[in-house]
Image 1: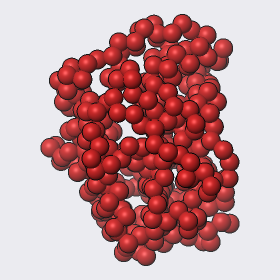
Image 2 (image 1 turned 180 degrees about the vertical axis):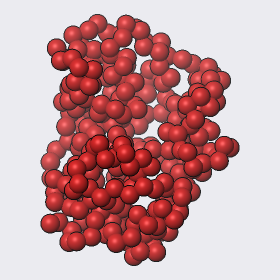
Image 3 (image 1 turned 135 degrees about the vertical axis):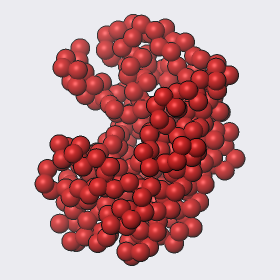
Image 4 (image 1 turned 90 degrees about the horizontal axis):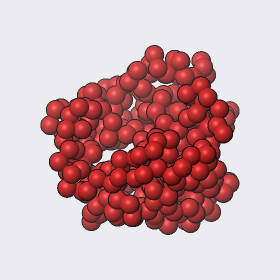
Length: 317
């Protein structure tokens, strides 16, 4: 069994990316422990080969318990989604910073030296988008923690069930798509299964310690272009696309956040500010460490649409 007797802890193991990371770890023979808020959900997703513990990254004692007798931590949480443990007025980056702080302290307490984290292409302290600026703050926390940290920065993660590609998938199946994004903004795409695999490949790769990597395929597209390619794959006409102006997004974002119980700033910071800034990066550095080339957008999209159609009980054309 890879990695000896101690398990790899996956935080957020039932989510869009996390469940695929768990599967990739198991295929490589690793012992896996998942910290999840809802163990019942995990019970229906994994066999007995996965140890499931209940916890929340905002509750330090539960994180510390989950990290006990593990050898590495892979964090697959998404603070743009509702976080039950937060205070009503907490900014979404404050929520993430608090959770990351708890994870780092748990690792230190139990001599867990290895930590892998996922942020986003475009992360920079001077980024126009407050979401990517905030993620730079999180990365700084990690790289000054004294742990062996690796950060992966994807652009558009392509897979069924993802928030970003979900917009593409839903729009491709409709006649009219209303979008809270710029028609000019371009994204480097990465298949969700590729991203999960890359986290596992880098787990025991010392050349990745203390590094951040942009990740993705060679395909760079706008949301409109992705939607049209997906519609063609489904045998449908290109949808009519209506892009909301940034001013309108700024006005409705607080309402969306309240209704969806998302942390303040989650919508406005992610899709409103600087939404025309490209998320492309340079994905060449990581490829010398990987064991297979990235999947193209079309291939990743086909898998995602097939899974999406199967979940609706139909077949892909």
